[in-house]
Amino acid sequence: MEETNKKQREFWSGKGGDVWVEKQNAMDVMLEPLGVAALSKLPEDLGEHILDIGCGCGSTTLSIAGNLSKNSKITGVDISEPMLDQARKLAAEKNLTNADFQVMDIQTELKKENIYSAAYSRFGVMFFEAPVPAFKNIYRSLQQGAKFSFVCWQSPQLNPWQALSIQVIKKFVDLPSPPPRSPGPFAFAEKDYLESIMVDSGFKDIAIESHEQQITMFVGKSLQEASNDYLSINPVVTAMLEESSPEVKDDISSALQELFKEYSDGNGLHFPSATWLVTASK
Ligand SMILES: C[S@@+](CC[C@H](N)C(=O)[O-])C[C@H]1O[C@@H](n2cnc3c(N)ncnc32)[C@H](O)[C@@H]1O
Image (tube, rainbow, N blue to C red; front, side, top):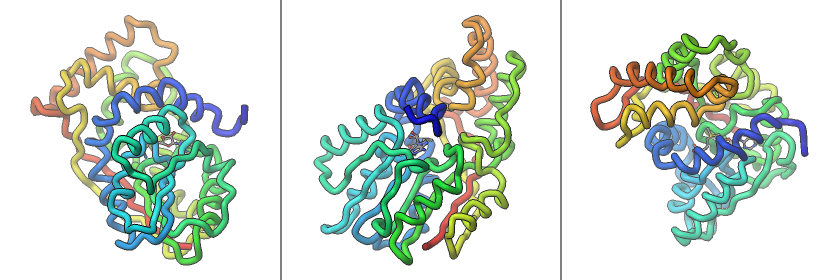
């Protein structure tokens, strides 16, 4: 088995991927408005072949596919087998024949050149051990002049759904936070670092825009279900809890429920969020 991105592959093709499949609707409610904001940065005519990077269960791929003109198609790529199985199942259910899915590590396996007319990602580009080689692959795979747009998280401090919950967890487990810039949801929190990745990968017309929007999590869930879900969807959190006993996990769950009360209106939890909307062209 390839060693590069091993931890991420294990998470997304293992327990993490299964949880994302199971919670797909909840994740879509949370992430959809942010993905739409990134998609709106691309031209209306996306050309004949679009790449959806780290497409997961395929929600964005299929939504784009549903709006494409007759001769266009979209390819979703991801390292997670279970998430792509789900994406293929949904494509078949929707009778969408202009979307296909490929299990592929963008950093080590995307070898195509001058193929895609546009590239897009909703939170699928922050998990590479080496971002510049991965982004160079994306760059090479694009046709000259093609546009790339993606959305990624700013710092946990600006995303209380993460920062506050981590504070709670840290009351119970004494584990270091992952080093800044390490693969994970917040790898691209620093704007200058993110910009340097884009520049070093060859992109031009780079724009990195701050986007703040309220997000809704765990609609229709009790506080206990919300806390259980929270503890299983995030690779950073699951790694922190790996060694904890069931008793400690119960204590964390109770404390999280207390915290979540403040953000709940009985129909989901509502948090402010801060993301980067990044656009560039080849
Ligand atoms: C936060 S999820 C986002 C999934 C999907 N884009 C969405 O918005 O629902 C991150 C995705 O990136 C994928 N991923 C992580 N590392 C990858 C890599 N090296 N190559 C391709 N996909 C990767 C994961 O498997 C996962 O599906």
